[in-house]
Picture 1 (spheres, rainbow, N blue to C red):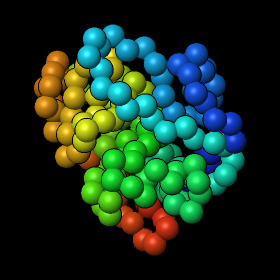
Picture 2: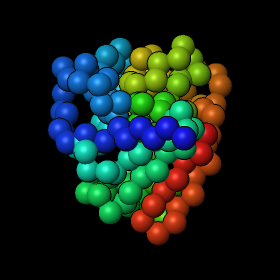
Picture 3: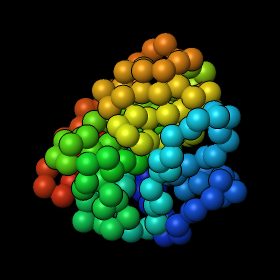
Picture 4: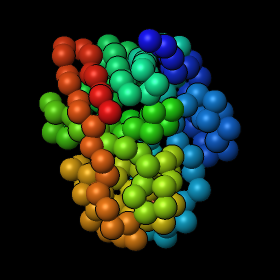
Length: 160
Ligand code: FES
């Protein structure tokens, strides 16, 4: 089994860091064309802190909640975009997590996500999805595929 640790040390703060985000495999790409995009930027992920590990060709993701870089996941509305695994995860109610593909069902954008007021928005064209992955605003018409999430103490495992 090949293990690919995608965590990094540097915080990335602007859309101008697109290429660096791509190298890290975690984060956010800014190219919004939506005129009323919700304001919920993905959390900044520092590197090499061991917070996120992706294994099995991207099919299993583990998140170490003891790492400060992912501490937002401990609270309701905390979320991550894990670009290297095309995965979104959100804490829906302070205790439970749901995870979805980050590949938008409209035209396949996978990195332009925001989250606010319990809604994910793909800023490529403004489609919105609720925390069940259901589309609530087009142009997308299909729901996001959901992944299995297991929370065990300070560890979250996502199986795709
Ligand atoms: S690709 Fe997501 S809204 Fe168009």
